[in-house]
View 1: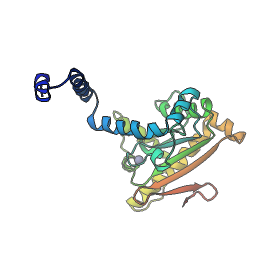
View 2: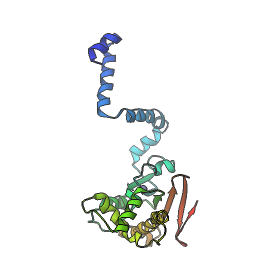
View 3: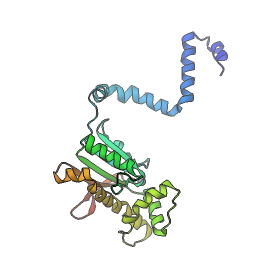
View 4: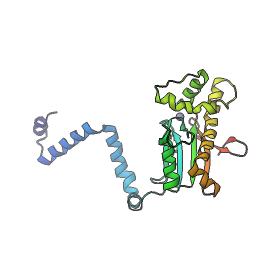
Length: 235
Ligand SMILES: [Zn+2]
């Protein structure tokens, strides 16, 4: 509707026209559904937790957990653990992989996030969280099996990090092998994590705890890694 027609139809006051124009401008800048969700959050969650947000702004963040999880839209640690803002430092990448340590690697985004959490924010707990039906793991499995990686694809390059885990899994039927790779890659990630110098240092002085977990999307059940038996148990 043109501004003139809106004016005429609504016999609008100047302030109403400004409101209408502002609304139109925002619609062009940001998706409507996200604006609506944001307004709901602002009027509900933010109002209820206003003092908490003000304190976070004033005092900064001091999260208690670093959580490494997948980018998969079905697996959101903040939602699963119903966390408070400021409680978790969450780093998400395809297939929740912690790469081997090398500070000049092309994978330094993940390493930098972990270093920030451990060395700067002094977070004392790290959780690597995998999940069922992981598309990243499935694709990585297929690439490893065919030994076919595309040097021009970032996804392929990233998933080639699964090779050491793939080499550890037993030869089962495909579904079982993929599920197994989901869990074995969590163990490999934890081994990589333990080799990071700033993590190693904290482990030596018992200042950091590392956990492995895997969530079954359909049942919502979390399985935690028992380091003694190297088995994931439902919690
Ligand atoms: Zn995934």
